[in-house]
Amino acid sequence: MIVRQDPFLQGAIDFHIHSGPDTHPRYAGCLELARQAREAGLRAIVLKDQMTQSIHKAYFINKYLGGIQAFGGITLNRLVGGYDIRTVEFACRSGAKVIWLATHDSGYTIEAAKKGHYDAIYVKAFSFGYPVEPLSVFNRERTELLPEVKKIIEIIAGYGVILQTGHIDPEEALAVAGYCQKVGHKKLVITHVNSFLEEYRDEIIAELIQKGAFIELSYSDMVPRHARQDPKVCARLVDRFGSAHCIMESDLGTWENISPTEGLRCFCHYLVHCGVAPDAINLMVKENPARLLDLN
Amino acid sequence: MVMENVLRNAIDMHIHCAPDTGPRYGDSVEIARIARDAGMRAIVVKDHLTQTVHKASITNELVPGFTCFGAAAMNLPNGGLSPRAAAFFTALGAKVIWLPTMDSEFTWLKAGHGHYDAIYATRNAYGIDYPKLTLLTEGMYKGRLREEVKQIVGEVAKAEAVLCSGHHTPEETIALMEYVKSIGFRRALVTHANAFLEEFTPAVLDRLVDLGAILEISNGVLVPLHGRQDPREVVKIIRQVGADRIVLVSDAGQLENPSPPEALRSFCHILIKEGITFEEIKKMIVQNPTRLLNLEPVKEEGK
Image 1 (cartoon, each protein chain N blue to C red):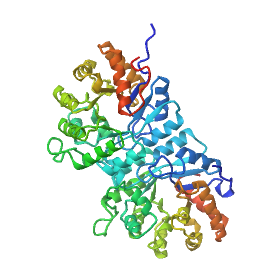
Image 2: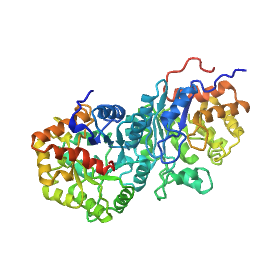
Image 3: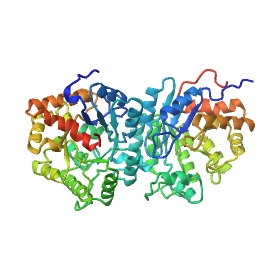
Image 4: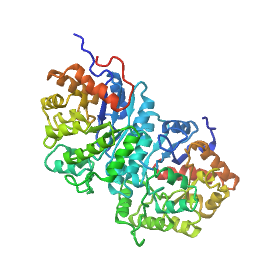
């Protein structure tokens, strides 16, 4: 699939792409998606898998494809041991650039799925028919972060790896942001916050940003089979909180949707139509992610 | 004198490769190329702490004319004894599932008594203390096979993948193979059965083979830095249970050891020097792995 060479994509970074091989049908394998992104002018992509690491995929793209930088990481769902210190140490030593806290196995997502959030599709698919014990970063009383979560944040901070909040609830995110601030870890991203705006209200987002977090805006919430979100919602977030604190990404790679690179391109143009300045878009799709990924 | 290439159509069911956190001989693409050029048909790549299906899939895209199979070992960073994880790995395309290796209680018991596995158990722990896994309800020696282990076996059977026993006591391994037999599953391997001969006595091996298990015999036990096993020990096992019940593997890929195809080639020739026939060797590196992995039999078998 050829993607138009668009000025917005020249040097752009897609911070969140799903790729094959995976158990869920994907748009293409990781090598193919990386090739498309490279040909469209992207500088880097971040690959995400829900139930295993994506570090090896990135390794092979970087070694055998070239011309684009791929980054991998790991998502701390149950199938990698959940909030497991050794898993995080393993991932960081393997070259992880991003660690996501629990996504489909988080209590927040499991509850949201029951109430009809589109994530229900994925919660069910990734359960493989087995019951899933929901993950929380809190102790039972929700008064404090689990010791292993604190240790995980310390390990991540030590390696200079980006921490993504995954699908945790706003109180969890505030506690995680507070601990990042305490240990001086500045690479914190609130994963596609536009997916969770019912609970992530403005005052919470403001507090997260005040604690040093970036907020991630995802195109995936706008696609027909997901939330069908009005792009004005993201434009308003940019206007309200400032592009200096935002990152744009596609969160695509799902089979039935447009390609990730094409999605990112459209997302840029939609926001322009909603009044976001092209300079602000470049900041959110190029400079901010580059800084977090330690690229020049 | 022109020697027949012993590796022609061979399948090595146990290879370690980069990327990994420890130093490796090469990555899966590099090793697949060497194996293909040596005349081999396929390899199975194994990591201890994550799945290798991604590696295998990408390798197959980049190395035509050869097959690399992915696997997963049910250690804690792969979900531990989680049937859901086994369902995920087989759905992803894993062709082999190992029960716990580095994270088993037996590994750490043996490591504590000087077994060479201490090198790898320590390396994969990263200095972190973590709970160790057993297959029986009351630990390594007593109790019934854990329900979650039965469910994992069920997932492997459903996917027609291969089950490898991992690092466990004879009691655990026998209970496992009794269950495997009870459900009529026929693709179970005893992981490097020659690595723990103090416990895996001839009587234990006989029992496992009676239950239908195939014994994996590893060259890794022979190399200088490991068990320095006398190859005649391997010959004894082959003579005891017969080549029909054995798969020979290199278990290589460590930086300091020979390349996996070279290790397997040398392993085969050393066994031939010790009296194993060429035909027996081909059973153990061609026919038996071909059947276990559900592949089309090759023509010219036995040559």
